[in-house]
Image 1 (cartoon, rainbow, N blue to C red):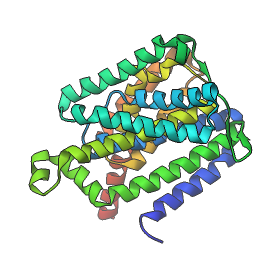
Image 2: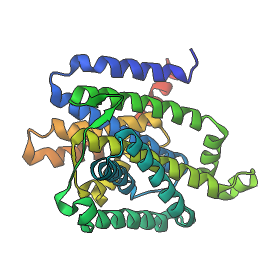
Image 3: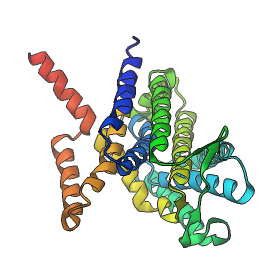
Amino acid sequence: MNTRLRPLAMLAIVLAGAPLFFPNSYVYDVAGTALLNAVVCVGLDLLIGYAGQISLGHAGFFALGAYGSAILTGRWGVPPATALAASAVAVGLLAFLIGRPVLRLKGHTLAMATLGIGIIIHIVLKTESWLTGGSDGLSVDPFRAFGFTLAGERPWYWVAAVLLLAVMWLTGNLVDSPLGRALRAVHGSEVAAEAAGVDPAPTKLMVFVLSAMFASLAGSLIAHKSGFITPDIASFFRSIELVTMVVLGGMASTWGAVAGAVILTVLPQALAGIEDYESILLGAVMMGTMIFLPRGLVPSLAAAVRRRGRVS
């Protein structure tokens, strides 16, 4: 089997076998949410980990996908699959228009600009109540396609699993392509990349648009899955949570992005029974990971395994 497909096949086996250990629908629900968060983080890792461009406003693109699907299906009767695709295209176009000026910035100025994008989207969703329902939120129609209605946590888990596999396959091909090598060159040094014949501007813009569309797709599916959304899904804290997932799992590692998303989605639920210490324990886990595994969970563990193999 192709070395690129072997890890993907292993992931498919894990996703197919995991439900054997799910005791109830609640675990299916958390697992489905974790996989959709992973879709967002894989796209965000392309931007942060591979291209070296920080974004503190990706929750805004996630929320636009969610609200786009909710409004198109609920207000205008657009079929959910069409609404999902239309929202992703619209978010991609917005990211393209925003990215052209914003991605000329670097470092903390880029971080502040993307943070401003997220804050603006959050404010619009909160204040334009005639369209979005404002702070009260918005109901979302069930997802219907080909005469079937997705209802219940189990079907949504499989939809999220299939989407994640598709995104991982696409991302793996992209990372190993000339574009992926261009992204790594831009991350290392834009001057050196230009000297090697890589134009940094369109390279960064392309990955920014792609990561925004991944976020939109996940947001649309989360909206239909939960049946209700509020502007809080576009909050600054949600953007920070997404970036933290990527950093915790390991930047420039699609598998790390998946691991970080799963851990930071599942761990708060696992610690929910100890309310007084939940935040402390969660913070301790994250601090410990960054202190002892500074490159992130997956890259650090992979390096340790390689070192051990060389010693033996």
